[in-house]
Image 1 (tube, protein in one colour):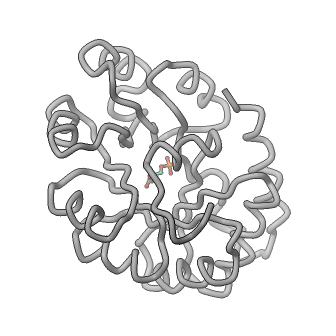
Image 2 (image 1 turned 180 degrees about the vertical axis):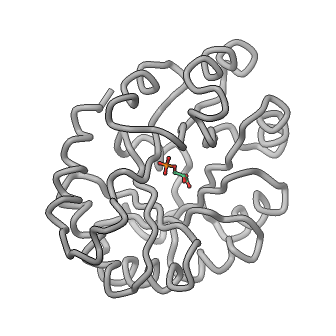
Length: 213
Ligand code: 3PG
């Protein structure tokens, strides 16, 4: 995927069954983490803007691991979106939706997966032209039942459920017609970077390939 060509949200969702939600506390961990996920067959990487080092991590991955496609998670403001794009992010994921975030991502040519947890939020995102959405927090906000209920009125909307997803419950979500992929933090256990156990990340990523639709 040519880094100069903007991605669509659907391309981000269709690349693999799971988008890893990554929290990095040290820029030195960014490149080995990205390489470990790539070795396991996952190249769409959501690095969350939850730590002071997150933007530097995105920059390092964008620069040093061109085979990966790095995005920013936890984008909560227009400024976050702009900073993520400046750091080299190719897509953005937000926990909720505001028109300001939507517009900032358009301006920065960042594909956006906006977070929604209610019908009104879906309608607001759709009004602004976003119909590929993150359902967050998926398990806590109604899970599979909620997605089935939304399939009626929102027949043209596609979801990436995130929040409470595991390797075990992912197949129930991926079996739904309105789910393209899921997101989850389980691929990057909190202690892996400190232990340098990148092989574990690769194994966890490889396990997700059985989830392919
Ligand atoms: C997110 O930010 O998308 C969630 O924290 C991921 O949820 P999980 O940790 O339950 O996978």
